[in-house]
Length: 132
Image (tube, rainbow, N blue to C red):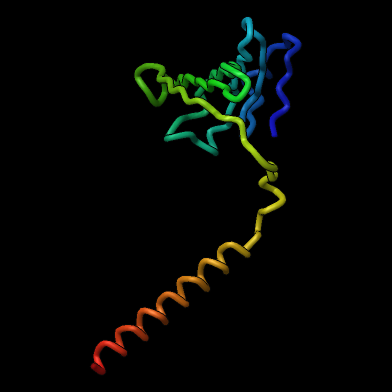
């Protein structure tokens, strides 16, 4: 979850560094622009430093699609800014908060059990084919 002020306030002072940075947002027409700065460098993105700045753009393209664009700037890591873009389609069904499933080992155990059953079946098939 990010709390992104949209009221025009400035970023936190440079000496205030946070794990995920300081967020500020504004609208450019129909596009929400979110700028992130003041990272502490302890959670680097692809080798970035605390000097990284991230600019994200969220634009609704149609009723079911949002275009997500981002630009990463970090002169301490890269020689020039770089960008990427993707489309997000509307999700059908519920969205589950990650925190609700943290430590949920059910899926892991289900898959581990299924792999064990598959291995037993494969071993039984091999034993059956060697007896013939």
